[in-house]
Length: 280
Image (cartoon, rainbow, N blue to C red; front, side, top):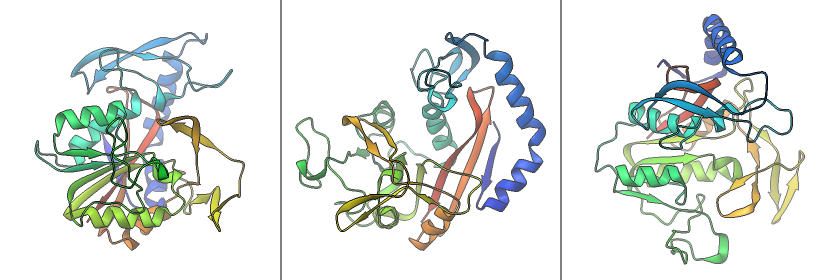
């Protein structure tokens, strides 16, 4: 699997130019394996989480009545049940984050299958969810889950060697403060890995909503994403562009970059996917 590291929109535009033929081949491959009907189907590949070749399960969940396959959220491993992006998370983490069995990790989630697998593989993993004022910050909920606000974490300075945040910062109005808190709780040479809704052809972030005087102000039609704590969903405040990496450096990180990847062999399908990394 090829990984492409980039730090700016100019790097990305160069990537698009230099990989145009392979991207065309991947597009043709998706067309060839997708049946004309909208029935579920399978594609073969190697499941990193199962450690073997499998027939990945693909369907049209999240696609709406007539939409195309949402590849990032499907291509499920029949053994581990992890979808495209989840399998990629474990795979890229092992490549990029230099994990040791006793490494200390903080995750900004705690009741997900991804957290469960990380905590089983790395016992020194702490996860949390955001319960708001239902519990004190740092307090455990009635099901034993820690309540944390990523803009004012209760952890000590330099407590963790690694930090993982998957699709969280788009729901945080003051995301710059969350970046600064991530920097604070990481040890020297610590690394952070995160994902967010990302617009690779935009230099700047797209702000969808803000908070003014305690009130939410919508600049674009409200968009809600799935919430593990509620069926109501959680508001998306922004999509990110390349300026996000500069904002990470402003928060103190000495380096911040994106990794772009796609792989027919591993079932990472549907166009290039992005993960982001910060180094303290």
